Length: 282
Length: 265
Image (cartoon, each protein chain N blue to C red):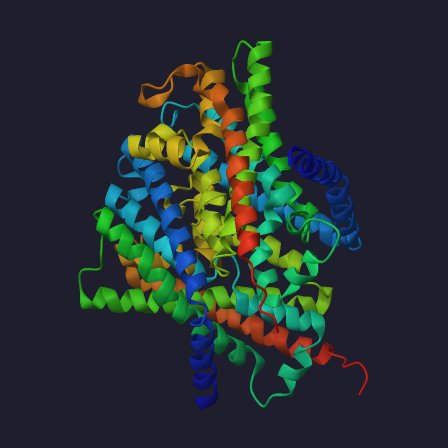
């Protein structure tokens, strides 16, 4: 009994260690195909950066009338926006294609994925990998760099580390939400846009100081859908601002733990969805 | 005329089959509506009367905007994207064979789509918004008529732009790059990222003169009764752009048709 468990674990482990290589292989294939038309690719990359960057342009336009927004200066807003857009952008780039799973189920292509020697999850994540989505993290990085330069913060190793780790854990939280949305499409094929409320909507929400939305929203994005851990709590700590709801100021340090929990939930949901899948069979 | 009506009715029916997609889409619009309400409440609390809007105008703007994004086709619409695809793949040759006018055909298709999305995607967010917030509604029958006219004009202006974008494929083979650029312009100048009344100085003046302003900002201002020059001049502004865009569309159709070479056959 114990031996078979170990074997199962071993085979799972060997599969999981093959994942990065397999994902990369699939992604490179899609990148090559998109680079076949370099001019069109450049236009779409630029277009993607511009479209996603408009959210910050709106903030800039608002600041032509105001000096602070919800207690945040323009540079501080830039830090919030940059982290929100960067984390969503990275998650969207790496795994955002998973929201096409509904289409794949409808057309029956998922059946083909299931008989290939690569996990269906990886194929869904790399499906139609769009390098042009790099546009969002690129513009977010630009806003982030300019905002950090404009901020007067006593940078310590701890603060730099906190910001860097929160960018990773924030991306993982968004990625987990993408997967949860994909898993839900096993239940309801046409619900691709539902996840948008939490991913793109989440970015829209977290680019602003969450306290302006009122205590109920802050509670909801702390305890129900933990979007506040994507960037808000870590950024509050970097800026030395108190956390809302009387939460301890070190709550931002919990972001990696929240990310781990979200990944576990997303993994369970995806497996449950895949088990539930019945081909149309025609 | 009968054929175009029939096309519009069928297009309406076609879009009405995607029920769950429509519902989840409306849900997403509603979530974004609440987010924008939080942002605008903060902004208008800091600067009451900003851009000539009071708080309730700003909140009404949010829910109308979220409801109108899809019907007007601010991000582009599946109908004109489909037209662009047909130009790219060459299927457009079939459309050109038909004893109908290309632009009117696609305008009918787009009208059916817009009508369905106006009812399904426009109504739900506004309903939720009006239950939670104190929103402004037109107060007289004349204003309702003006709103209806402004919405129809808004869709037609938007179609005029999207039709030209789709036909650009005749000259550059792939209209998707242009679609992206058109989306940036549409999001910025229509009042989607921020009401145009809040745009400062000359940026605001330029933005309010563009055709994109006629798609979203102007109809919403008609609803709010906040058009700077009154309802009449607002509708005239929209009509002006309709004339320009549809004339350009007809010209483009004529030139594009001459360009078409059908391979084989």
